[in-house]
Amino acid sequence: MAIEGGCHCGAIRYRIEGDPIVHALCHCSDCRRSSGAPMVGWTMYPAAALKVTRGTPKIYKSSEQGRRHFCAECSTGLFYFNDQMLPGIVDVQSATYDDPNAVPPQAHIQVAERLGWMESAHKLPTFDRYPPQS
Ligand SMILES: [Zn+2]
Ligand SMILES: [Zn+2]
Image (tube, rainbow, N blue to C red; front, side, top):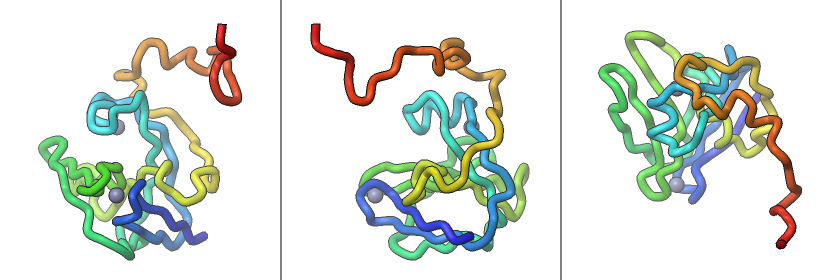
């Protein structure tokens, strides 16, 4: 399966060939702080499967070994590398796919650091757009 995706502004585009190793929703505090979102979806691939086809991501050292690649123009997070923990592997932020429904996630990880209210977030009321005006 081939996947294409990119950042919000379009300065960075990428293409992935082959099947993901796993797709996990990460609740760790590093993902939360760097994304500004309660959790981040990551699809894992052999690093060689990923080709950046437009632009050059900026690299942020988010921990001793962790390297987060993002668009310097629009700040969208894209890739994660950790040569010590995950040699030869790239994690791709799955919400940056052109079709984010293409690969459903299989697990929640790092739930030891999950926000308390995330455990029951799926029980909240839902609205197609916004709540009715009162
Ligand atoms: Zn961008
Ligand atoms: Zn994480």
